[in-house]
Length: 108
Image (cartoon, rainbow, N blue to C red; front, side, top):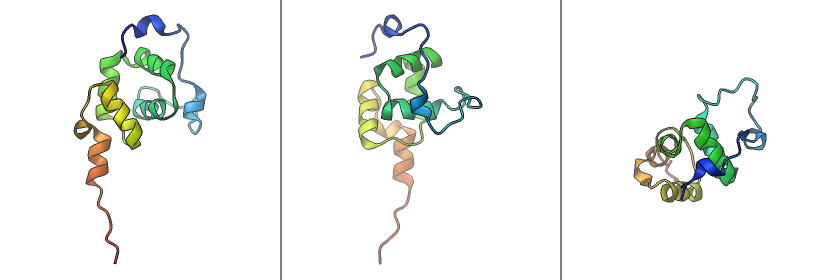
């Protein structure tokens, strides 16, 4: 799915401000906040944003690891897409494990 992404990316590509509307970009560290960036790209971005993320974080394999290990929350739709696009099992993803481990209060 992500073949030839290096040829498709624009040289001056950056993550758009519209994805990080609630973050002060002058103080935001894109490396430390890569889980948030990855979450926003899959939820609200487009394919060019994925290419930009591949460039920023070291390729498809690294972004796959970010989605598996660092993203804290994904909607069910985004989770399904990421599992298919990066050949992951939902049971291996941090956001899925976290969701399942939360207890649901009883209704009396």
